[in-house]
Amino acid sequence: MWHSSRLPTVSSPGWSVRQGLVLLVLFAGVARAQTPPAPPDRRAVHNRQAAFRVLVANHPKVKPNALWGFYKRYAPDRIQQFERACKTSASKSQESLLAMAQHYLDLEELRQRNPEEYGRLLELEQAESKARELGRRVTALALSSSKPGSVGHKSLLKTRKELRLALEKCFQSSQQNQLIEMNRLEAEVRDLRALLQQRQGARELILQQRFLDLSGTHWEPDE
Image (tube, rainbow, N blue to C red; front, side):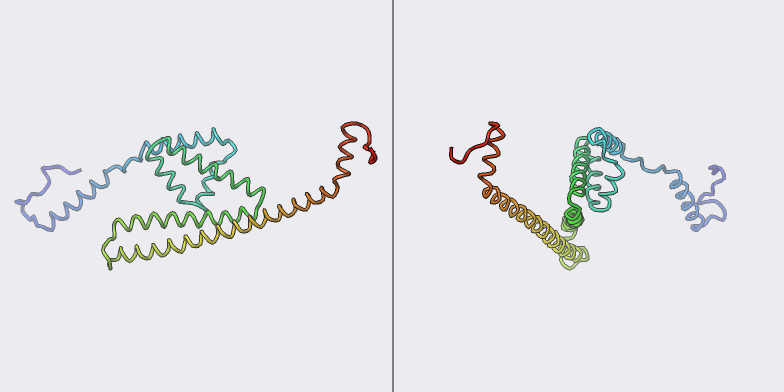
């Protein structure tokens, strides 16, 4: 432990600038070592825990780890959005997490019903997530890189092009998915139209059967 009576001073014999610098470095290291780490945002932690309690209460079948793993893989920007909401308010963090859970459940239901469409929507989910992240980067770069020719401005132009390509990919993926869905619906309409025509051809048999069911007697053609 350092004692003031033993510390050399500028007037002490043998004192040099180099010794003074060494002491400054030593004291700086001790100060840094004794500085405690910054405490976490307690409000954000509290809001995050409250949001997950609300999630479990409203969607008991949703496993938080599975939900988190899904968004971490397919839409990480939604996790970042939730974390930002936790720093804002409890209501916004809960609203954000519940929306994520509902979207996840809708996709899980689709996975059971139509695995092929589910796979296509996952690809679109990833593309949309990338586009949203690029959009935020463009906004941030635009605010800090206004001088043409600078490194930041070049990065802005590059990111804008990346966003354009990402949006084109999202559009193409969405168009393809909607086209497939439209073809499926058209096939269903064709099947319904054929069934309706068959029913029209069996009109007399259907009427006779209905007459028998309601009256217990047969309808005679000459009546």
